Length: 215
Ligand code: ATP
Image 1 (cartoon, rainbow, N blue to C red):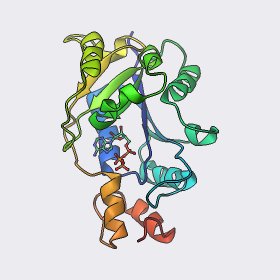
Image 2: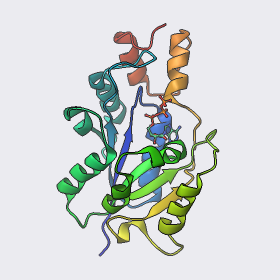
Image 3: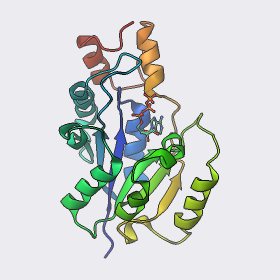
Image 4: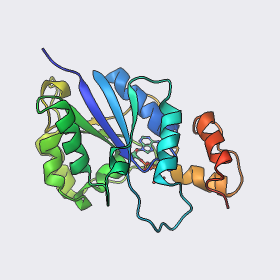
């Protein structure tokens, strides 16, 4: 019997927005997914733009996912000291779910293009599948190294991601691909312009109450 997939959806979530949330939900609609862990990463202490703290980014994730039982606001990277390596996070999910659980890391195409710079990238596909989600406005070509990785690991027609625990790459265009980014939202808020309908009202209210992303 095939099991369902557990997904790791990591990001800065500064702040979480409908691009993240709708992608996470649609993944549960197009694939046999039992849970999506939305995992906020640690950020370096000095950033070049006003950002929210780890606790605030987690609180926004909790507000955004409150009524969606398959979406989990996960604080495991914020609980750890030091930088967040995806390989460590996948290892921690592996320990939680066991070696046979089909596990996949979700990445936008832009994040996938940065993969060659990731630490311990060879171990990622040993620990999990990769699901690479198309992101409108992010059309850069993959490097020869990534094209080779795709050639080796891309899911073939007739294969299913949930048939094995790890090692495959699936490229997907989701039905409601959205161009929204956290950078754009921070820019709007920095100009005191409305960001409404790009992210949940509860998150906008949190941003207002905590005076985040102000000029
Ligand atoms: P920033 O603008 O600050 O870089 P972001 O909007 O890209 O932030 P992140 O938290 O960095 O958001 O993204 C986390 C993950 O979600 C990444 O894999 C990213 O590619 C993906 N992602 C972000 N926005 C979208 C979107 N609109 N559609 C699909 N995937 C997205």
